[in-house]
Structures are given as structure tokens and as C-alpha cells.
Image (cartoon, rainbow, N blue to C red; front, top):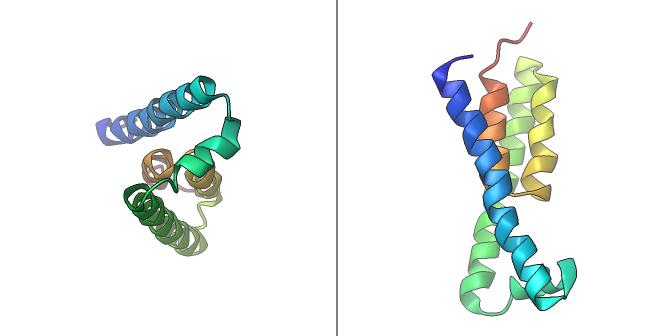
Amino acid sequence: MSVLRMIYLGLAIWGAIHPMYYFLGYMRETGTGLSGLIDAWYVNASTHGLVWDLTIAAIALTIWIIAETWVRKNWLALVAIPATFGIGVSCGLPLYLFLRTRNVT
């Protein structure tokens, strides 16, 4: 495995664990669960803007993944889509780059 692929994989793992640490901590602290976390995303204009920023980035990444998967026939790369929406762009993008740089047969 190349150094670049290891970097992508490391970033995907970091992008899955680090944000989740804060999400779970917030939910544990407030006791509101996932619905409370989602409500907090819309508490003011700043967080609302950040949610839209990340949503638009996630949609653009999804379109790119689908378009490239269709051409390259790298079907495994589609797992980056649920990672993007289930965990976040911080996991989905480096995961896709990791999967994209593998040899496709």
C-alpha cells in the first residue's frame, strides 16, 4: 500500500473517530440523544450555515462518487456515500480517496 493511500486511510479513520467523540460527548452531557444533537445544529445562524456548508459538500461528493464509480466500475467506492451521510464528510471524502486509489480489476 502506498504512503498516499495510508494517509487517506488514516484521515478516514480520524474523520470517523474525532468528530464522533464530540457528538457522543454532547449527547451524553445533555441527555437528549440524536434529536438533541440535530437541534443544536440549528441553534444560531453560524451553526445553521455550517450545516448547509457540509450538506452541500456531501451532496457534491456523492455526485462525484456516483459519476466516477459509473465510469471506473469501482463499485466498492460506493461505501463512501453512507459513510459521508452517516459519519460526515471528514470520513467520507478521505475514505473515497482511499478506495479510489486502489487498483481496480
